[in-house]
Length: 58
Image (cartoon, rainbow, N blue to C red; front, side, top):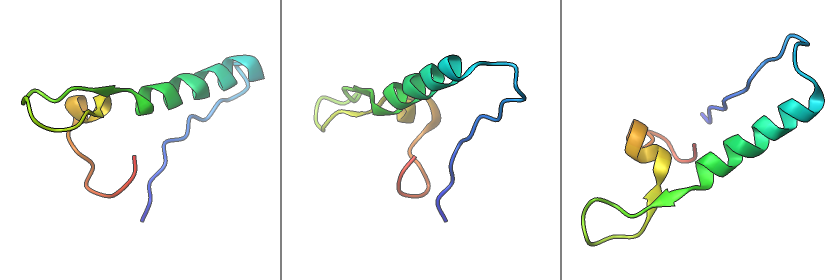
């Protein structure tokens, strides 16, 4: 079952702030880094912080 992160706002932030947060989350999940080993393709940066996902996707 896919899992999704959703930030719920109680009306304290305007739409411009919320949309900029969504853009930053997207950029974070797309960022890649070279793995610690010399072989291999770049991996998502968030995997280096949290480990590989148990399911496909984020």
